[in-house]
Length: 286
Ligand code: PMP
Image (cartoon, rainbow, N blue to C red; front, side, top):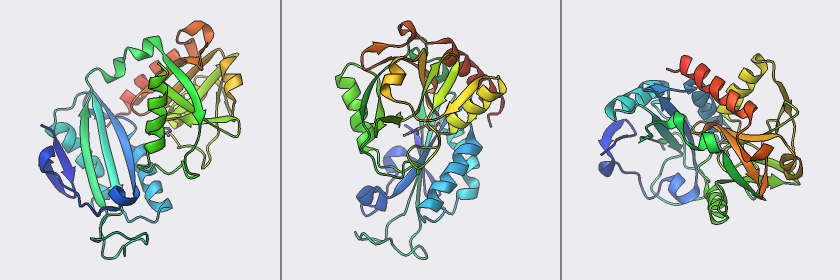
């Protein structure tokens, strides 16, 4: 049984409790982060912490009391659960003032809820999917307009994954006004004539921590990066595709809406970026 963290306490998962009036339960009024663990160490932790702070600020949500201890709590959960490879999920909500109301509760008297738990994923970095690549479908992007805030409103992304599954595919890329925004739980990229193309940062997409690291490593390796929107038609004619996220790192895309990319096998740029990302982020892991 896992040991999880709730508001200052480390508890067996079956004993961890949150109020039925919690704003995240009633209103999806919460934000989250997922940090991967490789070899018992946290990958890109400072980036996840900085984005959490930004998400809280954008929603006028108070920092949890333990904010400054988050690194320590992550490490303690890794230790208590013996995590070698896996994920740490963290969620902060606006808490509960013991009733349901659209109006935010008084932040002076209502403490945020902080919940964290681990997911063990042995061999996380050696995923067999990295060798075969993902098949993607395209779907309309029906989410709200502040996708830069990492909220727990994940119903539409879940529906997107189910649409992909029903179509015999692995994931979906979302399209708005004719252009790809991002994947259901990752940032989206294509490669054409050696150029890496990915949508620029704005409120339309999550500012991926893995995206930031991968683009930095790509620049350092003298690869050309173009930050601009692309269409599904352009993607279908690309040499390669890939996605990035904290849990999948760099994952090749080999098919979009039934059209194979670059012969239907993972391309050299995605494969190389995956190697560089894993190598460099492991070096910087805490
Ligand atoms: N976009 C969306 C919609 C996501 O859910 C995620 C993963 N949380 C990402 C992008 C990738 O972000 P990161 O690299 O920080 O995991």
